[in-house]
Image (cartoon, rainbow, N blue to C red; front, side, top):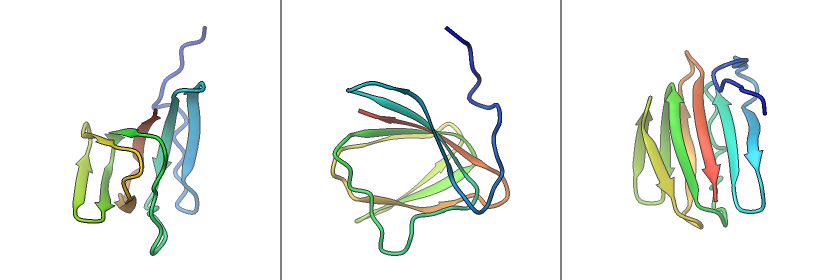
Length: 104
C-alpha cells in the first residue's frame, strides 16, 4: 500500500486535459481530472451509462445540462445520474481546475 497525494504533479497545459485513473474495478472508477480552460466540443454531450459523482477540489467550472447550467466552485459536488446529458461549458483558464470523478 502506498500513500499518494491528489494535489501532487498537477500539470498546467492549456493544450490537453489530464485524466488519471486513481482506482478501478468492475463496479467503480475513481478519476482525477485536471482542466486548464478545456471545455466540451461544440454540440458534444456526455450521456454515459454510469452514474457520475464529481467533486471540484480546485478552480471553477460550469456544467451544462439540457435544461440548466450549474456553476461549481471549490468544494462543490454533484451527482449526475446515468444517461443524463451534460457537458463542460467552462473551466478556469487562469488556474487549474481539479476534479475528482467517481463513476459507479
